[in-house]
Image 1 (cartoon, helix red, strand yellow):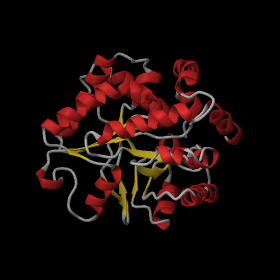
Image 2 (cartoon, one colour; image 1 turned 45 degrees about the vertical axis):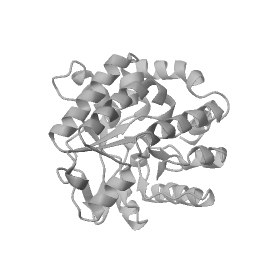
Image 3 (tube, one colour; image 1 turned 180 degrees about the vertical axis):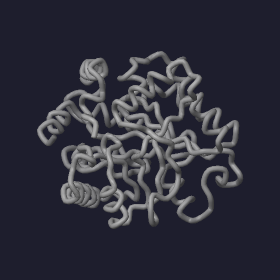
Image 4 (cartoon, one colour; image 1 turned 30 degrees about the vertical axis):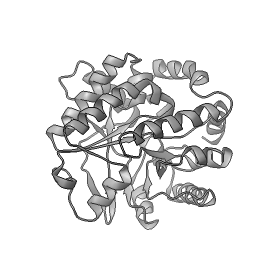
Length: 298
């Protein structure tokens, strides 16, 4: 198992630490507004973003529930801890605490994304036993190898997540649907590589969309709410192009439901659409204080 702190790279950690005050603030208000902006942006395209939520955030900041209205939600653990570093009982306890927290706040979620995309065989067994419909924790490279930053992206991705092999969209086992996460995500691009220029971000996300189109696949983009404003222009380009090309823009719950119903998958999207696109963004903190809580737990 990778040391997840070390896998961010020293440069990435320094960049992120310097950006935290501007992204979060001392209370949840700033992030609440960014979540609402993300949901509003996606509503223009008549689709919900999928936001996997670390459930302890709900208990610390119950006011965020109102900001999440209009999003498709998934569970992102109770504490933001790598599941692959926990034994079966620890994983079960964390997962059950998250399910309970969602219930206390009147929220429903059929899907799961592991913190740090860190899983093992016990994770999937537990998800099936809790009747989750889908998992979205397996990373997959979507940037073509000819791209100028492809090698850097792969290096950072493997430092963070370990060896990354081609993933298959579909069933992990039983009725659990796997919806792989497309790399590079916003963390690799913005914090890892220090890319902030909108033209570069637009080019990269556009190349990933072209890859999905060419393979009639599902492009599962990851853009955390705290960085959404940095990638909004690039996402607009991708969604405009997807609309022009007749792609299916859908939440993860919708994609999983389509596959689970036996209606198809890659190459067999609704109404013969050429490929599918989802925009997701993990919510694991709302304020600077949340990071201190995470350190104490881990």
